[in-house]
Structures are given as C-alpha cells and as structure tokens.
Length: 367
Image (cartoon, rainbow, N blue to C red; front, top):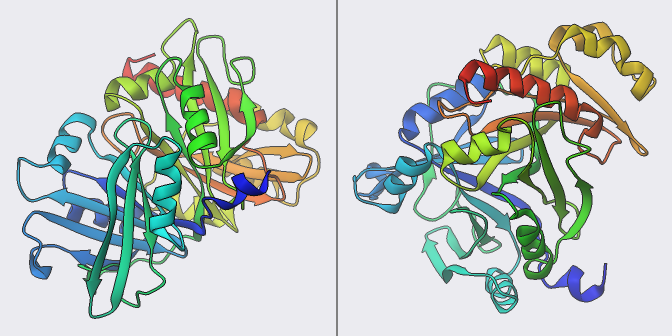
C-alpha cells in the first residue's frame, strides 16, 4: 500500500455501532440477556434529552447503542418505519476527526454533518459524519480529550440487572448488502474515499448453491482493524438472501456483524442456553469437513453438537457460526467467529451456509 493511501485516514478501531430501534429499553434487555452485554451508558429524559433515548451496552471492546425516538416525527422514527430495527451509524475511532472529514470529503464523500465539538465536565469529543451505502453513515469520533463514561450527553448506566458475559471480544468485520450492480461502486468508495484496499473477492462461482448466489468483496483499512465485506446479489434460480434482505430492509444496509471470541465452543454453548437461535448445519457436513481442513485442536464431536463450522486458509483455520435474524424482518444477524490464525472469511463454508439460509428462506416463503 502506498504511503499516501496508508496515511490519510488512520483508524484506531470501531468506536461504536448505533442501531435505530422501535424500543431501546427492550432491545437493551434482549442484548443483555441473550448476548451478555453489560450496562454502560444512558441518554434520555433523565439526562435532559427530550427527543430520544439511548442505551449503550459493552462487552470487552464492543459497544452497541440502541436509540429510540420519543417523538413520532423524526429521522429516527422515519428510519425505523422504513427499515425496521437496523444499524444507522458505524462509528470509527480516529485521532483527528476534522482531518478525517476533510480527507474523505475532498475525495468525494457526501457529508452527513460537518465537524462539531460536544463538551461536558469530562472534556470534549469531536465528531464528523459521512454517508455510505443506503442510509448507513460513518461517524469519525475523536475522544482523546474526553474522560467521561462514554460521550457528552450520556451518564453512566447503573443497573441492578446484569448477566455474565459470553466471551465476545471485538468486532471482526461488518458486512454491507447493496443492490444489483452496486458492489463495485462501494468498493471504489472505500478504496478511493477512505483509502481501504480490497483483500478478498468472491464471485457467484464461490458463493452459490443450486438455487441462489451472491458476489462479495472485502475491503480493509491500512492496519486491518476495520474490515467491510460488501455483498450484492447474483443471478440464480430463486431469490437470494441478499435480495430478501434488500426487500425487507427497503434498501442497502448492514447485514451482519461478526463478533470475535477466544473460545467459540463456550460462547456458542452459552448463547444457545440463553435462547439465541443459530442456522442449522446438517450432520453430513461433519462427515467430510476434516478431509478438507485437516487437523484441528478441537474435538470434532463437540463442534458437531454445537453445529460450529470450520474452514482453513494458508495461515491457519477458523471456527464460525451464524445466528438466525434477530429482528422480525429477515435482516440483521450475527456471526460468532474464532480465528486460529486464519485471515479469511470461511469460503469453504459458503455452500453449507447458503443451504442453511435457504432452508430458513423456504420456511419464510421468500426463497
């Protein structure tokens, strides 16, 4: 990667992911109960905000915000009415939000809002925002001069209700679904506007079954902390999962968030115990998987019992499993992933994954 490309938008990591939802209190309870997220910060009527309520949940380096409008006529209400519960903001932690904004705007980004400073007794945070696919936005967050619980306007969220964490560590990647013929447009956006590089590409020969197919390209920033696969539909005999998502989400948006763990067996076991539903992987998958991936440290019988998928690349192997959609609309879902050296995204599991998704689509009548 050239010096110019590497340096103009340094990103330290994912700061937070904000969902616009119909009922933030209940969403927060679900993520506490099912996924083991911990109460972190709160904003609402009690903090002086008359228009919206936000609950911030954390687990290790992952921070999720669930925000609901308190008034019927607002951008938040409009977003939820159109899309259902979904990701609005992907916030990127940077050292200089003003510079990040200038560099991306001059390369063609559409402004969401110009740099602004928010302050309280704990210091100040600089924010700036740009648009990406659909109604999704990136927020640059510069918090080096802030010592508060989360951000100005929030207070520490003290709750009597807390559940044990399940071992989730950080966001590994976030996948965006875009419409027909739009993948390369957004690949170019991340390359030219944000300085990302394409690290992997999959076409409809890689990701297909008898019935459906998609294409995907994975974009990564310079230090590899931010990875955004971009999916678009490909021609198939029936409606693919990407088409189903776009139909129900009413446009492009974040399809799934992959969260990393150091012990996927313990994590999946606990998530299943708490009622999180996962895609079904058939027994036949495990009859031949070790022929494909070779030796692994884990007991294959335990992986079979938990329905965990396995794949290998030149650098190692990975273990992964995907939840069913966590909304009533078949839109957002989660991936749980443990990397044992592998840098890839489970190409060898695509067929099994697609067939599991198609089984769910068939039950929904949307295949």
